[in-house]
Image 1 (cartoon, helix red, strand yellow):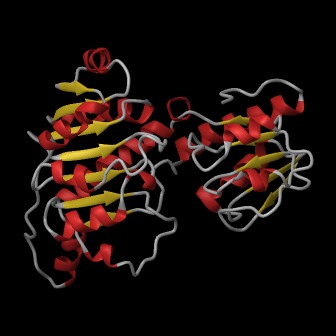
Image 2: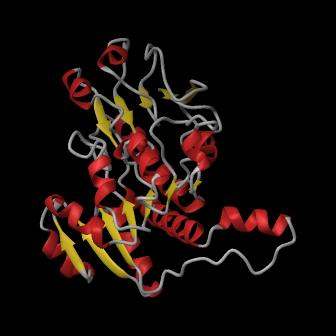
Length: 314
């Protein structure tokens, strides 16, 4: 079978090479960018961040599976694919090691923005020692929006820091809060209440029609003065203009971003002159996560080859 990888050859830490080593009897092609023009000749598509519309799907002639190398399928027209008889599957974060890796990066961003690591590098270059003064996590409140695999992994890792943990969950928030030992839990209708209580707000939920631009002007206006936003989920959760306004008007103290409103973002965007630290969408890009994701993707390709139903089909 031919497997089409909608990304540069070496994207995601050499994911495609790892996959080749697992299933070497198949043909592989990388588009060279995060997108695809035609699906002709492809049996399996790995969409990565590419926008897979109904129009693109119409170009297929033998496509059998759209298999995401991770969990996010918001860029794929899943209903259209299903109508065309194309299987769509992902690799959930909590079975691949991805959730653990993303949670680790969320904490890195929290500490980095609190300890002013970008300023610290500049001070050291100038020979200035003992500054800047940062902010400790202990005793602060962390509000987690989304208590799926990533949110749960983050809760587990945050507890030793001595923080108060709050959470928002779409369904059964009280049960989830009790099970995770949270200090407070609420549903989506309580988001603004949680924003006002949190020193850090960490986004750990997928983009859906309901969550698109979740962090808008009103949401930033509800955040606690001096607080920080951390986004390790999807850029579409945050309205760029609202974030820029909140930063420039000191409605919040800063942000740590692994994902953006467009990817890659414009490095000359003036928003990056604000108090932001960034990473290039690498939260799940670790050796442990890649091993788990490659194993999941390879297994589903084998299943399709055998005429079986893929795991984690949508």
